[in-house]
Length: 105
Image (tube, rainbow, N blue to C red; front, side):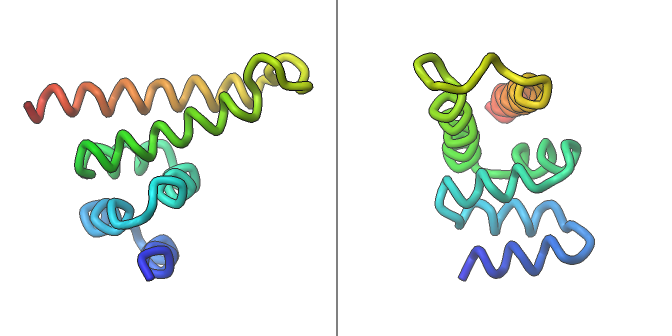
């Protein structure tokens, strides 16, 4: 049910507080997919408004996905520019999220 609600929210103008609340209700893997579908500025705003545990779980799923699919021991060649860019953006999001946690504390 939450996935359908999130899909409906994404079809219209993004109401960040409402979307953050809906993403928190998704399982971590689905929340990660939702975050990946957003523009960078929207992702940051959604993460900042999410509960710390939910945001951390979604970010960890995103990082685990990169590691599992492109980490050492895989048969995938060295990281592509796209993968490097994605990982860099994800690292910036994680840093921004951590800073917001410190500010909330």
